Amino acid sequence: MNSGNQFVETLKKVGYPKAAQLNGEDFDWLFETVEDKSFLEWFCGNMNEQHVLAEKELQAFDALLKSGKPILEEAALDEVLKTCKTFDSKSSSMEEGELQKLEEEFQALQKIKNLKIHRRNKLQMMASTNSHMSLKLNDKAEEAAKILKERQGIFSAINAKINNELHSLTEGVKKLTFFFTFSDSEQGLGPHPVFLSQLALDKYLCQEEKSTAALTSYTKKQFFQGISELVESSNEENFQLVDISKPLICDENNEVCKERLEMARLQMAYICAQHQLIQRKAKDLSINSAVQWAENNLQSLKNKTFGKEHLEARISSLNSDISKIKKQLTQINNEILPSLVKENAQLLNMPVVKGDFDLQIARQDYYTSRQDQVCNQLLKQKASFELLQLAYEIELRKHRDIHRQLENIIQDLKQSSKALEQRLEMMSDPLITQRAVPRNTIDSRDDASHRLYQLLEGENQKQQLFRTHEGIEQVAQKLKQDVTSVQDQLAVSSQEQFLFLSKLDSDLDALCDSLYCGGNKILLSNQELTEQLYQLEVNLNKLNQLIMDLLADVKAKRKVLETNTLHQMERKLYVYFFKDEDYLKDIVEKLEHQSQAQTVGLED
Image 1 (cartoon, helix red, strand yellow):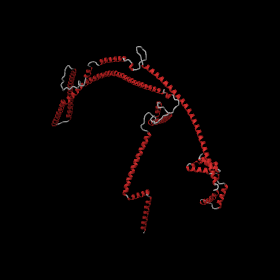
Image 2: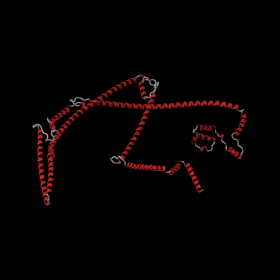
Image 3: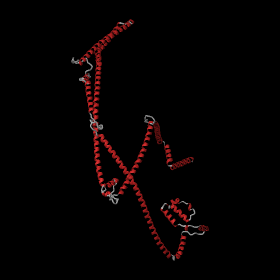
Image 4: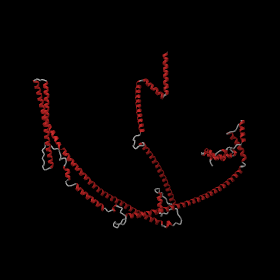
């Protein structure tokens, strides 16, 4: 029973008129501490109807209070109670003997009653434990039967699965053996070869020999004997500009020397022709200029009359000019004109040299194109041979790996067969199979159970004197619980990962939308962000300008304060106003007293 309900029940026993309207749960908070609970126990155990005053007693007490008579309290009441106790002790001393005897009999009967109650409770406990054990055993038996059925079903399913896998394995081995085995090609029996090493390369080699023979015949046709000398004959050394000033010494039977002599003759003829042409043109120009000069002078002589002295001076100046011009002409004829004519003559063989070099370039291009064709064909043959060799090497490596794996499988099968034989021998031991009385502990010779126990325990192995089957069950159940917890954790982590990936995909989509803005081209800058950054930069510039203005204002005010004492006094008053108002009041009062004193002095 709750504390509040017990309290309400006690109030009902005492006879509280409104106890039926109270709820015990509303009074639970009053009896939470140990002291409150002890008070509740005392109250519920000692209070009864005798401790409740009747209405008449209450009315009499109220009348006593209204009458104004003194009421005994505390010390006076204790003294009166002591006198009453002495009087009562005399009258009750005679009854103490009888009461003592009755108490002894009551205690003896109480002890007998307690003993019988204890025995009854003990028997009830034993009966309840027995019934509980029987129910527990029944539940365990049902659970064991269910587990047995489940295990039998699981073992049958595993057995069927193993049989199916063994059947599929045998079928696969048969197919594999049929796939890899082949008979002679002459008989025409068996499957086709599946490996490259099983194929005959006669056709391939015959085809390659034919292509090699065709390539050699093509090279003999295209690259005949002496083609290299023909290509290299028209080099730069054989076609240089002919210098006439230097003598040419070469063999007349050589074609190159003949060509060079012919070019030299052409240059000499060109030089002579050009020299004669220039001389003719110069004479024609001189005659034309003399005639024109004479005509001009005759007209001027007809129009004007000159003296003899003037004509002689004019003739002397003209003779000096003529001598200078002749010197210039001789210099041009002897120095400048021959060099220029020689240079122009040397340029005559440029088209011939260019044509020969063009022919040489065309020959070299043709030669290189045919060389490229031959090289490409040779590279193809080499690539095919290397590819075939690489395929053979890869197949050999795969065969070695398969051989190694098959050897490992054979060794594993041998070891597993040996372990199976040992396990069958151990299971055929009569000590394990035939047990008259089932034992809970594991036999020391039962290696399988011990290995299973070690496998289930793992690294957390404990030193135990005996190992029991119940311990194996407990460890297996613990392992099962760990597996389920790990699976739950994996499910939770996979769900969290899925949520994280979905969130990441949404963020990526948002990022792509913000970068591409619905188009196909990426936008490296956001328009809104650039505008905000521009506005921020403008605000920063304004802030910097305000700070600079503020610093300049502060510097100006500091200079003013350093020079003006009145401003210094004003600043001090402002500082006192904001930091120490009492001190400011004292200063103001002093100043007022001083001003009043000054005004009084002035009035006097």
